[in-house]
Length: 246
Image (tube, rainbow, N blue to C red; front, side, top):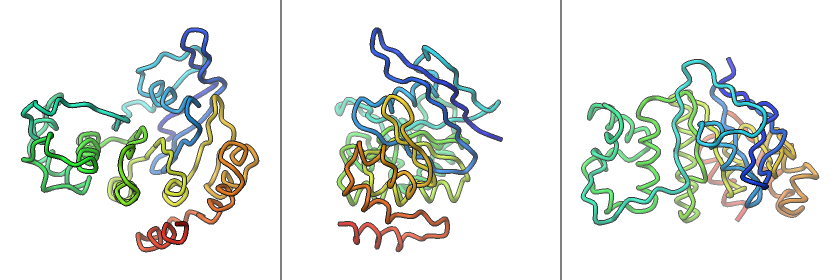
């Protein structure tokens, strides 16, 4: 059963029409990535899906009982605030220590439970945010440029963790990313957005689409077409593909 259905969606801020006539679906277990230039409406689309932004047209339909995990683009915590990872994980929900430990394990950082949030590196901080989004075992995980500020190795490791999460939990993943080479190796489907859906499909199809190349350049598009996603690919394949692209 389809998890999320977006129909003829429009989002307007004052006189600025950010999104128009957007249609999309998210199916169980798939990894879908939204790409597009700055100001193309990517974050507005996610905010409309989680109910933080009210559409000016169209509608968003969620499967009844759908559980959503959300990793924001940024989250500021006062560095002088004494708060442990465990306490942060339990701020808004009644969850057990075991649930916290399991979520941190899924995010690849089980050793951080007692660490202070102010002591975390950028990559560790994002992994904790991922764990917080996973703690209630969501059906779909939304990530809004969750690797912003991380270096290339850190970003690649984070996206490999996302693939592990999908494989282990079966949850669908909808993410925004500006790291196009990673997107093409990690996604089942790509949606190119620029106020509307310019094109969508498999990574190879989108990378060769004229609309995509008009936004990101023919050289980049040609290189990205090499990243044909294989459901049976392993981490070594991903790493080798990234090395070949550098």
